[in-house]
Length: 197
Image (tube, rainbow, N blue to C red; front, top):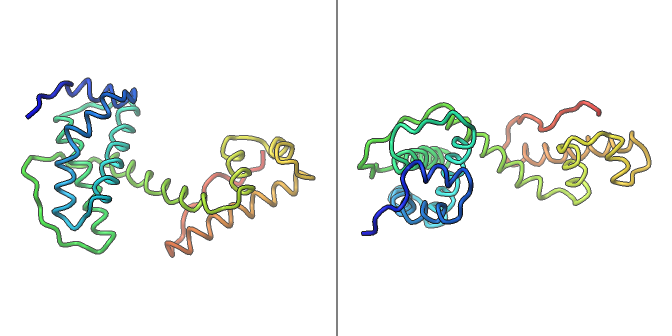
């Protein structure tokens, strides 16, 4: 068995700075235990890969958010995040029966982990449906989200008037929201804002 070459502090710092060598070490050190957990609980290889990526993103966001204090090992913390995310996924899939293969003590998932994972889930949903929009709609909404004014968007897109730009932005947002509602069957919060710049 190979020895760990990075301390927990170095692992967290490497994740925060996106150091390639440290990121590879996460896979070497932690992926197999998470993979075993997923495969033992109604998941497959693709599920394990996706889950590990999602858990790393959550940990990255917590570390980059500041004021993060690790109160256990990185291994335990990452496994706890993964376990929470996977059990949530099983519940979503209506596979509520799972066998616990947990041999360690795990941390309680704090509310900020729940908030981060839910935010990431919504972001994935938006990106999936955003990618289905026409290239024109994607460009208009991207410019809007970047903070460009109606006048700037009108000029950049070569539209005839600011009123046309407002109407186009509204239609594109409506298509995006309707697409998400059709897929998920419930009311969602619109993204962006409705104020004209």
